[in-house]
Image (cartoon, rainbow, N blue to C red; front, side, top):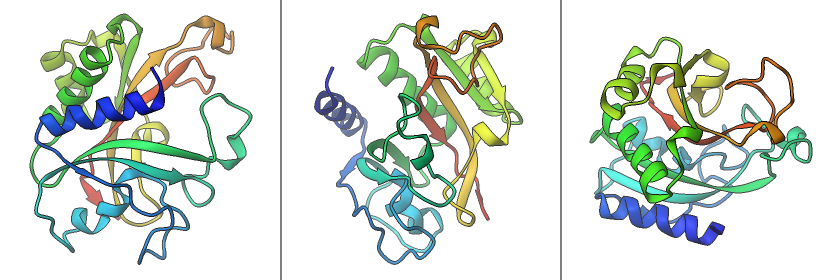
Length: 211
């Protein structure tokens, strides 16, 4: 499946689930001196999450043009050294502004990955922030993920912040196991390893805090 097909399928899925499709904002963010480049899909919604502005919709989805070449999310030094970092990329995202939260967000993500995209569940793992019992319970009890495939990781991997200041919170990732052939070969290689075997394909960010 090509990038255009993935983008189209993603946006159509969330549109039929009540989301307003929002165009990508500029690569250089307007009115935000904390960022050099737009580095995530939520940047154009920062004011909404902070309660500084309101939109006429409570659910949104977008395909955001991003660059991570400075600041907290600096991928530049990894470009060319891994198979998963790029100077420029598009970030697909769905957002809720006081509408749904963890349970529905997790359900949307899993349905899209497992049903719409048809990725076998045997190849998928889930990570949660080590203190986020709520998300872990939703994955296990509502979605039916085996507990041994739910991995708890620390702040470095599973606590998201847009920058040094601003919205932040625990996150939960869907990971695909690409197989031993693309891994590092170490006997302890597992979810959380920095090699290319276990690839993050979805990051659910639960913005519960503002710092």
